[in-house]
Length: 235
Image (cartoon, rainbow, N blue to C red; front, side, top):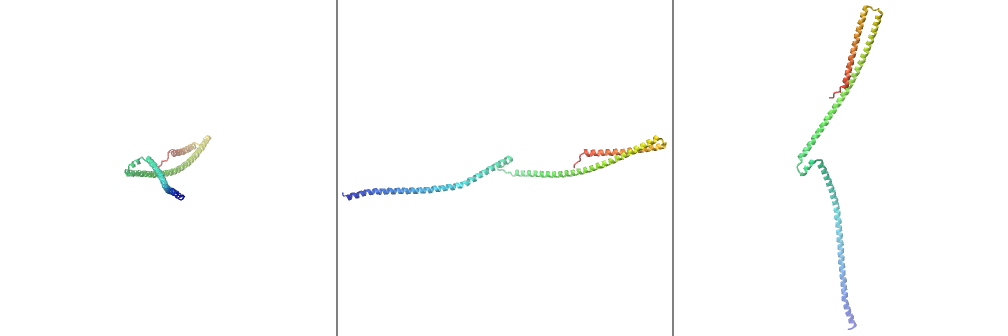
């Protein structure tokens, strides 16, 4: 075998190896391409999943806030209903779903009756205040009249006192004059009789004046006692 033939055979044996290497390289390239495609597809799927999660979370967040707000509102309503049930135990009967129309009408009628009583009490109070004001005015007017009457009685009492003093002085002067005449002995029998009559008449006048003064003083005292101790009558 010549050197040329040996060289050709060696080239033939080397070609399949080269072809196998090419096939292996192509297989590796296909695997890399498939892996790249699968990796790209996986990345896109993961990206889509993340976007969906963000969208769902963004939608769920307001829903959670709304649910929390509604739950808080329901708790407040329940607490208020509990307070109402404690304040008005009869409202518990309404939970059964029964008709409470009659009960509501009864409550409304009771409230109307209480309002009517309140209005009547206010009217009675206004009438009482009016009567009290009239009674106070009458009492003030009566007090003024009583004060005027007391002033008149005091004035008359002063006049009676002056008259009594005047009669007393006149009687004393007459008695002293008669005593001097009797002592001197210059008065006759007729003179003495006239003197005695004058004395008696003067004494009677004096006693009459004193009686009038005493009666006036007693009347004044009685009126003062009635004014001070008897309370005014209110109508």
